[in-house]
Length: 532
Image 1 (cartoon, helix red, strand yellow):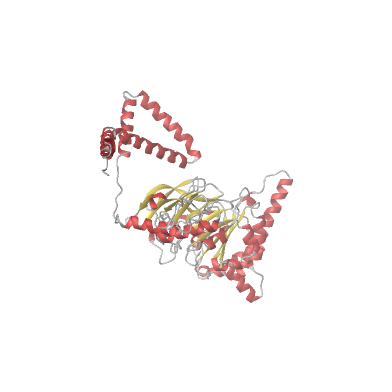
Image 2 (cartoon, rainbow, N blue to C red):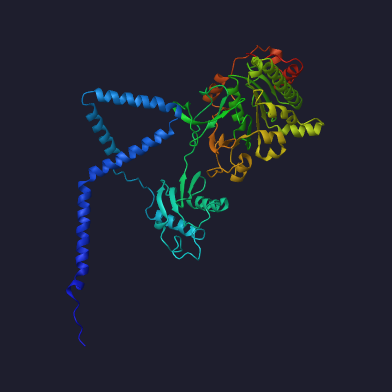
């Protein structure tokens, strides 16, 4: 039986379809070439608009009014100038064209290595993002990563710096344990030793991963622009609405600051700092002391006995620097009595219809560095733990303008008293720490992945029930330490208040511990009125 030839339309259909596709592709390329300037300008206008919105969102509310006034004044000047609107239009179009130009990212890594890395990451996620009952799984062994990954970016070494993952709707993204498994896997496959930020969008079933840049360590101790009752704990990147003008190295800039508010209206009147040795907890206490001496008085109790606060004794506003058990007991006993005296004096003044006395409103700061050491010494000597004397300042310090700051090591937090753990609602964790350790101290897990190696003063902070913030403490080393740089030494010495009296040679030869014990004992028996 002879075969009949196929109709002509069927035999030549594929050739006509291919020719039509080629013509359509040529027409699209020609249209793209013709409208390329318009596409570039449109892309630039979109980028400029998005940048303006981000800048406006990041502008503090107290600066938006002056910014609007300045913009309105500029618009009025442009309208009044001859050819002003035309020049502005030309400038905007030129800026949009420059902003929207095609800029291919520089890729120094291998083009073949990056897809292989993404495919390996895709295969590793298959057991977590797939179930046998799914008829059309998004993650399947041997599948393609392009359906689940988007927005990928790589650094110069070929490691991932940004990635968006689309996961199936049945994944339990509301469970912290399930999230932690995915975050740990992505961190391990993308490269350890970096700080990652994971943003879960449950409504869109998408996970965005990005590598955060390290916080700047160039900000040293300096006079910050704050009002009485505000203390700068350090600086962060996002999550705060306030910036502070600072000197970072040799450049002046506005840095987002973690500002801790104290006083009668504060909801977090006391602070707890935890960290490993060398993490910068003592530097943070030294920075707080320098800021507190601007408007108040400071009592320092140092349990380590290493002389980290040797620059403070004899300065105006420094009541005592105690390094021994006897001095710590005497100083904290006076602090408890002073708190009670302030409460009684303020209550009597209110009942008589008078404002509180000035000496009850002057801030009093009690800084304790490693109080757990005194607990062991007190138990061995048969004396009470000095932390027991902190109960009155902690419970009633907010009304009496008394602030308590406690710093201790992470492995010694169990030895802190119940009053310290209960009333220190502002928390800081410094140094290398796991997510579990950060959550134990702050009461909430960090929003980024902690790294095993961090510079001194790097960590996390949480004020009350607020969010967990990344933190970098301003460099405030001991100016008498031989390892301190000259720039940091001058910065700290310039912030120290003037000496309130001249020490003779005999007194200056005595150790700091004996000074603190004598001064605290004098204040307990015969308190000196606070300087106005």
